[in-house]
Image (tube, rainbow, N blue to C red; front, side):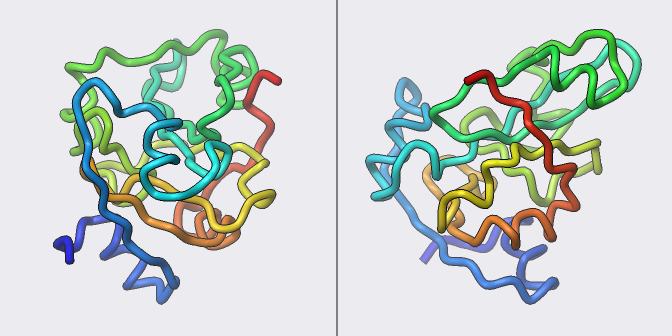
Length: 158
């Protein structure tokens, strides 16, 4: 079994039930569709974590279903910014403690404003990165909301 990550430790502290699922990963296949296939879920159950920077607030984090696109204008407005943009891949680890393809919305080294798409309660279970490539956490959407202290909002483009 995989070693516990910061995300797992946080869920343990909060007594939130979850399961861990390991899979073989490749640098060129870190997308939600590939992960979904490897762990036996639908792409809308795989929630990808995106790290962005707002022009007023600084870093914000968004988490959306793998089959959706982030609506940058919605996120900017909801986070009190005029615009938001993705941070450079080279900056992700320094900001979060995680590397691309292994960014978990839980257990980051600093707490940033966190926006979770409202569809999180539509699919059970949902899956998030456990904080390293090749390891996913399955949990109920309501538990993810609780653990992440999320702002649950509509931030995807249909």
